[in-house]
Amino acid sequence: MKIGIVCYPTYGGSGVVATELGKALADKGHQVHFITYKQPFRLDSFHENIFYHEVNFSNYPLFDYPPYETALASKIVDIAEYEQLELLHVHYAIPHASAAYLAKQILKEKGYHLPFITTLHGTDITLVGKDETFVPVVTFSINKSDGITTVSQSLKDTTYEHFDIRKDIEVIPNFIDFSRFKKLDKDHFRKVIASNGEKIIMHTSNFRKVKRVDDVVRVFCKIRQEMPAKLLLVGDGPERQNIEKMSRQVCHQDDVHFLGKQDAIEELLAISDLFILPSETESFGLAALEAMACQVPVISSNTGGLPEINIYGETGFLSPVGDVDDMAANAIRILENEETLAAFKERAFKQAQRFSLDRIMPLYEAYYIRVLEQASATA
Ligand code: GMT
Image (cartoon, rainbow, N blue to C red):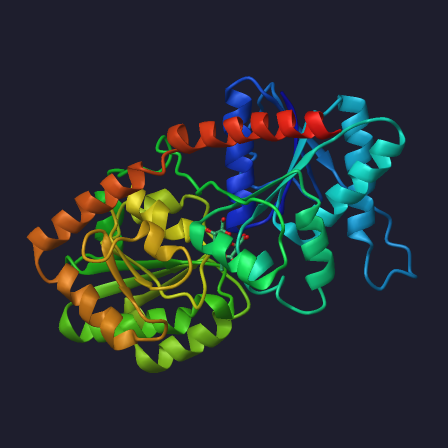
């Protein structure tokens, strides 16, 4: 199959999922064409079945807001015709779904049929999409998609709740590539960070308000009162400076490490004992699943799709959003006893296996075939 994939190429879950899916499809012999404004950061090596097409546009002084959507739609038209794409898969509705619809209509005028699937990832629905400004276009372009998927049941429910969607939505959860995310032996590294055997707590995110990284620091302070521990904060974003300031006031500076953006997350997870994800909303929580794949239990908020991956009392614990006392108490429950910790680690790993790439990728392939059949029947 010849598939076009549109996604955000930078750091962020939706771009990671789109890129890893494209790579897996290419491994299975499909020809995959990424269409984005920058090379996706996980597209880091040559593959005979993967092609990258950059969306570029000249920055004419009249454009206070560069018309990316128009440039993207034009690029899709060009690549679809030239490469004879059979299907387009766009990740994150805004503005990819409306650009895909526009491209489809232009191609239709030329007698070319290009069905498209929209995968909703979370903030395109929960935060940005619900902004009144976007509602008409998001609703229209989701309804015009030939196939719609969400990454969790929770996101499917939220989409129906907040948008007037008249089509079926397929839930296809995010996945883990176990050839990359596995327990690695990094004991030497652990000794550098926690030379006195301290427990290592980790959080990774894009440091946006929705991630509530300040709660991570508060929970850590409470854990630190009970046992020696270190906190690794991985990632960068708008809230980082505030969090750094706050942590200097409330924690001992040697205990909290701000590591910035890191590519080799699996190496840091290899030395971690606990992962904290206290987000306000989280449609899936890929970061938590990556932790579990590396045998790290998760303390999370009880929101969005998180209960679909983090199982209470088995792979970690879930607390109401903002309840740092409960999160800290649960963290201590897991960490204070080595046997308990080992049992949580093992169960976290087992649960992550349910989301292996080998299990989830065929769901996408089967869905592609179904959508293509339906679309050609109605074309
Ligand atoms: O806000 C983010 O965390 C980034 C965002 C994205 O689209 O890059 O993540 C969303 O999609 C991820 C991949 O499907 C999910 O794992 C995240 O839960 C989701 N983020 C939120 O819902 C806040």
